[in-house]
Image (tube, rainbow, N blue to C red; front, side):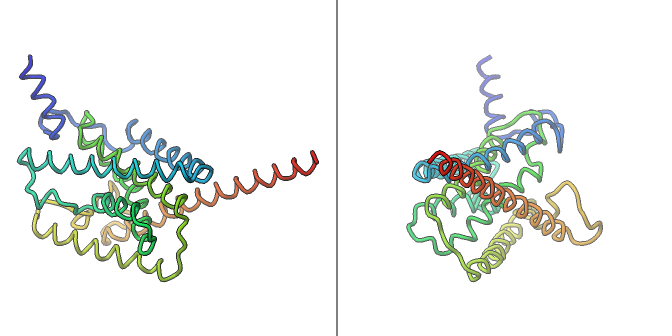
Length: 259
């Protein structure tokens, strides 16, 4: 009984796919619930961070340390299990890189060069739930749970960073985003060349469960999905600002009437 329990735990910890049955796939209950929760999580953090920036600064630091620590533990388990080499376990994927990059800039006073990290952290955090990465087995393994926590943290830490540091950017900063992304794609391409069986940053084949342009290169699909995600994120941000402005205006009118 003890050996069976240990074996089951190790299967869960190291994600032994042979020990579990197939998952329910894209748009299963888990997928839908996670996407809804991520939306609620992001909107709630925008409200909380704007109202309590000092709390956001401290809580963001806790989340940044938490996600980085869990990611390091994951890397150690991958190497210790013998399924990954040390080089293979290094940060190659976008969100894996952003996990550590976001943590670093969070504890640096200067906000210079922070926009690419903030932008790509949110983009990666949101798009991962569209990719459907967590539904290929009937069990949420340790790797899946850790990844879910990481992507939720990416969104929250970015919001906390903006609320607490209030960075200001210009068009030069905006142009840094595609340059930074191109560098990361180059880095991931090196990983894909070293490990042909991997698909870091989904550059070798489409990571999405659909292709909007048929036989055309799947990168066009990524571009359209990225535009949609960015539009929704910014739409929510400006909606929250508008609602807050309307609320403050209404409260001001009430106070004037009472006077």
